[in-house]
Image 1: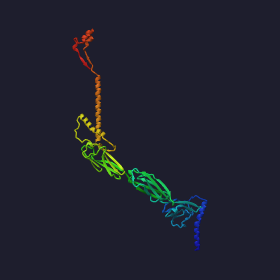
Image 2: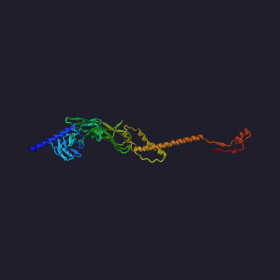
Image 3: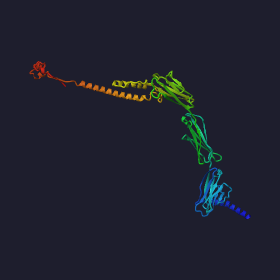
Length: 441
């Protein structure tokens, strides 16, 4: 029994002292591993790491695994180290594979695979322990924002290894942040990212997301929804009529106002004048009966909340009441029709307009007809001008080309023997006076 105890003690001393002697010899004469290979390992804290020592073309040499303190974990298939977290996964002539469960930060370091050859060979497996950060914490400087203001948010990822990376998203758009990394006393990293941006009314209800990138975790994020207040948005809708506004008809307008907070006051007014006395204003609605041309002008809806006020304009132009007229039968009637139809166009050009985007009761059906009348009027003007030009040319032509007359009243003068006889013959005192003839060319 004593011999058995002595044998066990000798074996233990051999397992402890012989690797140290090998390490001393290796330190004096380092040899690059040729046949022994292993791999680095990254493992999340609390998970299991696998260390594999593999030999190519092994000649029955002994394989053992040492921890970062050069203590033997496994010698062949025996485990001298009293740490039950190390377990043998596979042992053969070509491989020694060991698992380490419930890994902690203290297990991080360089593990050594040794092959007892002459000289001995070593290969190194670095175990890196990954520690995920805690849940990201997102904080905002302002809980409620106003349109156009600048705000600031921070996101923190604490106690991780290695340091985490933080990204920002507003909706589907990525925004740049300013990160700051701090190393804590326990060799952990805390990362804080600061985001500054300006908000507008479209950002109301928009999520701002802090995304943490770390090799130990995936899709780690926190988000906060924006609350943005803004001035009212105002739009005037025409309920009636759907086409042109004509005398004798009714007009109904509705003011659609949206804001945050909701507009608390909606007012109707007429620009540069008073609203007709019989107009009915009921909240956001304006109702005017029996329209006439004295109601023409710009009607404005104004909505306000605690952030300010906004307005929208509607330009009212009242047309004549529709009448039934016979179809034109002569050119004179047609010209007259063109003139009378185009007169509202002239009034339209002089009607007041204060807002380019304002609603205009003159738009719609009247515009195409006005364009057609203008075209017809232009054609008629061209035709009249052409006729006047033709008359002027003909007048000048006839003025310059007068008729030429030829007679035989002086025919006897050509045959007279002297001047007296010629005068007598020219005055018609000869027998041939009844033969006078006149030609016109």
